[in-house]
Image (tube, rainbow, N blue to C red; front, side, top):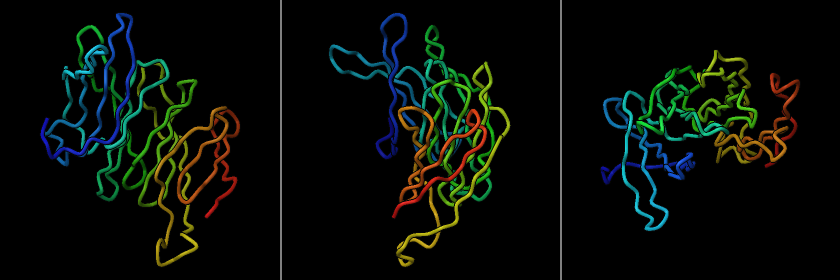
Amino acid sequence: MKKYLNLFTVFIFANVYSQQYVFFGSYNWDKNSEGIYVYELNNKTGKLTKVTSVKDIVNPSYITISPDGKYIYASSESKIENAGSVSAFTFDKETKKLRYLNQQKSDGENPVYVSVHKNGKWLVNGNYTDAGISVYPLLEDGKIDSLKQIVNFSEGSINPDRQTKAHIHSAVFSPDFNTILFTDLGILVQIKSEFIRLTAVSKSH
């Protein structure tokens, strides 16, 4: 692995043969370079052995795995206006290969965080630069369906010298999966009507 690569996220899951895999997202800046890496973990020695990687995705700086462990979702932090996206992959434990499924626009700049609801039916993405929260249905085959809802925030910090507008840093579900926490100095968003609609509850500074 190249020494200068910035690796941001790691996720592990076990398959039926008790093998464990570690997934790395990265800043690669070029879709012709490797973007997502998969390593096999030896639980006895702690050794990581590379098994595969994928290209054709730019800056998958944050990745997450579906509750059933079948699908991998990545946000592409492109830093280019209108070029942000979220992508879906599946990992074949038999062939040890990642397979690209599809991609959707994030409807905002610099998507930095993706989370999957525990029912496996919804994907939430946070866009950093324009503070947008995008919601997508997930299809039975793991693909990301068309954008269902976008919520934008505009408030800045109580200290305007520090932050003049909102910036979403993450999107984390509460333990009961009825609330999502978006860190822009603290935004709470309540899930309504089977998660289709989002309602801002509060913001703390």
